[in-house]
Image 1 (cartoon, each protein chain N blue to C red):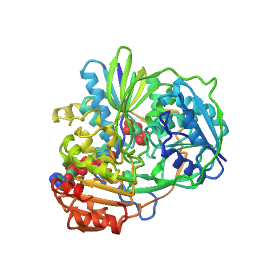
Image 2: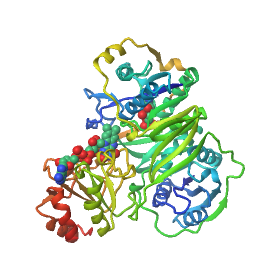
Image 3: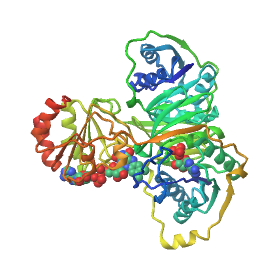
Image 4: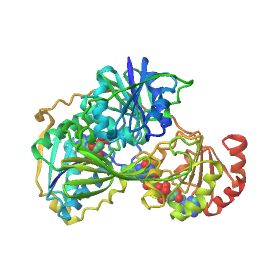
Length: 310
Length: 249
Ligand SMILES: Cc1cc2nc3c(=O)[nH]c(=O)nc-3n(C[C@H](O)[C@H](O)[C@H](O)COP(=O)(O)OP(=O)(O)OC[C@H]3O[C@@H](n4cnc5c(N)ncnc54)[C@H](O)[C@@H]3O)c2cc1C
Ligand SMILES: Nc1ncnc2c1ncn2[C@@H]1O[C@H](COP(=O)(O)O)[C@@H](O)[C@H]1O
């Protein structure tokens, strides 16, 4: 069995999620190769070659892959699929975008956002916002899988895989083009892989309050900042801060939820955190049912104190 | 322009589902069912495009039990023009749904298919992308903004790093994210009117599409339960516990 993991990157940096996806692929048994498709992403290919357990890196260099658009990415992956029994990608917005396209082109039913590997054809994945966990067996000859990276530990050790150039002669469909992007600038750690996350909810009431109450604490303890859907919808913070069933799934060492009620959709994105702290003025708030440490308090009183105490 | 909106009948987002004791699935008896929330957003966007004169016709389609009529009627009450119900007593997997939608696209020839990004029951996030692949069409997933510019559709997408905008040639598949719009409630007169709008019905078996499942559910279990911890009395106590008990600071 040989698996191909599609690397997640921005042409400069390889995401931590890629190594965790390699770990999931390794659990299926057999060799693991990594595909880095990008534009000028040579350094990413070198980084992928160092992931423990990777036997080979395929590097496709082309303008068409610069922004990971689904149409060219899927065409490339399908062109390489013959040699592989399984194709896996991290369940980030890139993988979620192109992998189902790959699956359909190969006439395969994708297994989405797995959190466990039972064997080469049987996988575990949460359903209903994590209120149930299903174990599914795939009868497709080739498996197409997206992986929930927080459920896997990056492989130990350092690899020294060879890097091979691929992708010559693959026709990229020209039905879509990149127009522009507005990326969230932040010096803080990446939300998906941060060791500490502090998230704010509707109770923060404004973007200014995030700035004056949440960000200084985040900066003091090296945390990433997250948010509930309500806080994102209200425009207090950018969309990529949303934690939950339909946002990002995080599992840091410490998750601090401030002014968040704890709707199941939010819990789905953070309940696997190691230690959970909830600060909420309503002692009945559902968030307390998953919190290791609950503080019933007004956040406007508690956060300044917390900043000073840290 | 014609817009096709696939809507799925799912367990309402407010329901906390229970796993059946025999681990065969979740208990759906007497559980409130609704239109998948992302599909409401898709219907809303399609109706808005019609109101703006960009689209002429909005067709909603559902694959599911007879009862999925309710969700189609809701789409019609929100302003869609007609409905198509493909009945199936068995659950159809995303790949099968995409194949059925392909057959419908070949007949209806829509310019845009607007789906939800994710059905909140199975949390798979794949049907739209699969349909785009089967049709050889462009795709704009996780949309928070749609603008028709000339003969292209500009889609702003919610991605991990922020927002990305792509220009799609038509026909195109678009999947909705939460910030695209706020779906309207259907008014009573519109609910009454919706009852008279055309709704075609076909059985999945008459579609000429192979929808046999590829995934077998071996079991469905409860997630590991997280025990509630303790309440602390003050910020000082909290910081002390995090430093000295949990060791995470
Ligand atoms: C299809 C769908 C997908 C969704 N996906 C997600 C998702 O991915 N992530 C997500 O988070 N949500 C998601 N939601 C929304 C979810 O259902 C909740 O509506 C949302 O999480 C609520 O956000 P909140 O806790 O910030 O706001 P609220 O529920 O309004 O809670 C605010 C909390 O703040 C507390 N509070 C108020 N004032 C203070 C104060 N001064 N000090 C301390 N505490 C205070 C209140 O007691 C309350 O508990 C989704 C919903 C749907 C329908
Ligand atoms: N049975 C169905 N009937 C109609 N539309 C569906 C069905 N299943 C999925 N869809 C559409 O595909 C989207 C994504 O679903 P999924 O890929 O299952 O997460 C949904 O939001 C719907 O728009």
